[in-house]
Amino acid sequence: MSIIKAIILGIVQGFTEFLPVSSSGHLVLLQKIFNIEEDALTFDIALHLATLIAVLVVYRKKIFEMIKNPFSKLPVYIVIGTVPIAIFGLLLNDLIESFFETGATLGAGFIFTGLVLMYADSTGEKKRKLEQMNIKDPLLIGTSQAVAMIPAVSRSGMTISTALALGIERKTAADYSFLLSIPAILGAVVVDIYKMLKTGVNEISAIGPSPFVFGMLFAAISGFIAVRFMINLIQKQRLKYFSYYLWIIGAFVLLDQLFLHFFF
Image (cartoon, rainbow, N blue to C red; front, top):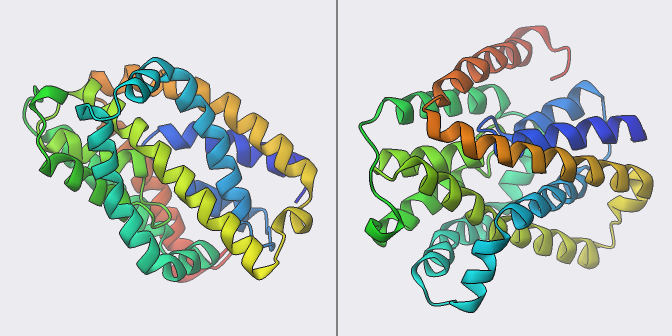
């Protein structure tokens, strides 16, 4: 993987991680377009770790508050919301990895995410804040995050849309979605490091350290810009516009997967 390709992937990851269009789907698609043959799962997770820095910076005050009050409602609900992805991640890890390698879910995943976003925008008025949330809310939102392990199914799109469908107001939905990503990304990093140590496969050596460094740097910078943008955008009821984009890109991917076979 060249440094230029790594930078492009980093920028795409940074922006798409916090837009409801699936960063994983875009990374797999670009890897197919660039014909990157190396097993790039560790590179993907490295980019996710870089964008996590943006969340930590933007939400640093809330994070410090949660550290000082670990048994208050928000940190407890983040723990509860993380349980589904932990369970599904352990049970379906091999299957999810195969989806990353083949890209088989991309076309359908993009279209599915677009449908979910359109539905979320069409639901009624959202008024419930954190104080009005109950235990079923983090469980349902966390389950939708687990579904988003599938490439091209957007994690932020699924969690925000589920929260909106449950009647949670937009700012709370965005905040909870982004904070919920912290343990999910960290968990994925820990699992991947364990697998590297167990198998002895060093993808950093295969891909090269320089692409990792530049990819992560640009992912962190673009991620910081994107998370600020998305927090403001989510409050203006414009998720449906992302649906149009996802349906277009999903249709092109399906066309290539089923008939053209340029990249799949």
